[in-house]
Length: 104
Length: 248
Image (cartoon, rainbow over all chains, first blue to last red; front, side, top):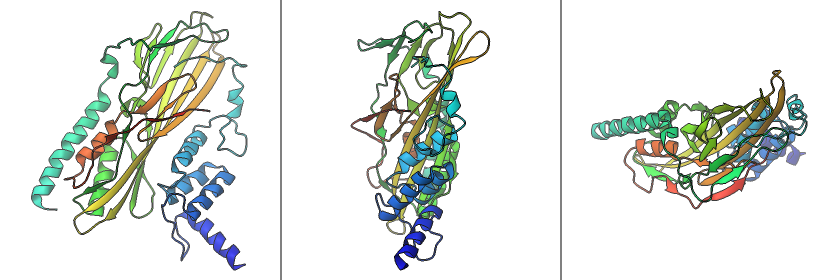
């Protein structure tokens, strides 16, 4: 139970930037809490989750990937691997019936 | 910081800001394109018939920021960073103590080099041009629009070395979103495709079609040239050019 509580605090601290007493996220690449926060953001798959990861770990091991996810979700990119649920924008992917315009 | 240092800083900062803003406003399309032997040509696939494009990738090597030490306190550094990125169009965002973060969304041409594209019927354009439109040869009445938007995120972590010096570890990550839309003569959208690439300092990346993009160094140069007297290595360095492929 203690382990579970500690894990919970770490996870929450990772997402809110260390607001939970006794747990301070450190912006060190590939730190355990960084990884936990990243996995949490991935599993949630929402714009807010990735933004919270970046706020807590601005220079974290997955900061680049998180920022890309923030962009992909904010522009409603169809079939973004960052997304858990299909988005309304996925409909746009069908436009063109397979046509592809080769423009640099 | 002494009065002399303060005065010197303001002078350098003004020059840096001027460089940044003028660079941002200049149209690289004014520069003549030089056809090189490795020009790539391509044509549209499917029923839309485009004349061949000609493309030449960026020539300058990627720019990478490296850690540096400046003669200033952490609060001064944070204030200066906030000022210069705001001038560059960035918006500071929430970040933990000891770090500074800011984001940008807008014209890619200000900070990114995507080479040059010779667009039939339009002319030569920087690959980082925000948008252009063209009409294919077939079918008649169709319009194709290409848009490019840059999202950039600057992060700088800083720590006090002593009462007068601060170590800064900066980094910038770039995400480019390209959208191509084709509208037929009836006004119906028949193609709506988007492609995303991202890259960090010292890196480059390619869209599916082949457009290669990397930092132009404009932002990095402006950031570093405005900081006060440098104690350690500071200038943006030319990286060895790691590269990654884009995917959607």
